Amino acid sequence: QVQLVESGGGLVQAGGSLRLSCAASGRTFSRYAMGWFRQASGNEREFVAAISWSGGTVYYADSVKGRFTISRDNAKNTVSLQMNSLKFEDTAVYYCAATVVVGASRYQNDYLYWGQGTQVTVSS
Image (cartoon, rainbow, N blue to C red; front, side):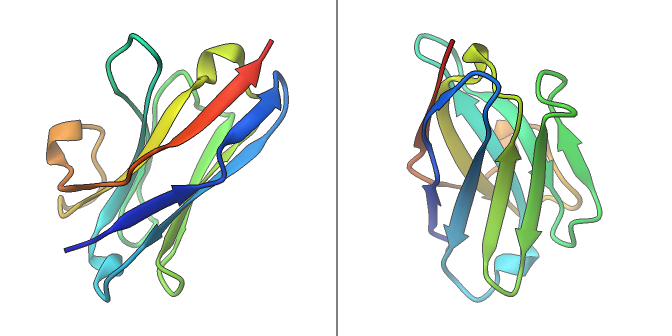
């Protein structure tokens, strides 16, 4: 069992940056690949970024590639999402999630555990 708690959301102007963090409970955090997803109001939840247990494999959605960076610190049981050059369309609730899939995964159905989400609002 893994419990996930996101933090770092807030209000930022377009072009600004935010860093989201996800703290995981449990001793086996390093066994899980992690992902970030987001859901804008009225839209379905979508993939943002994913990272393997070792950090050696990362995936990004095309919409965030080159602007967002996912990373993890297994010693601290955290996964982070550095978001730069934010756009109005990045406004959403951001969720972190954990999966036992080998490597990394873009697919929501692969993820077993989810955080409660943190709101990111980008003003234009």
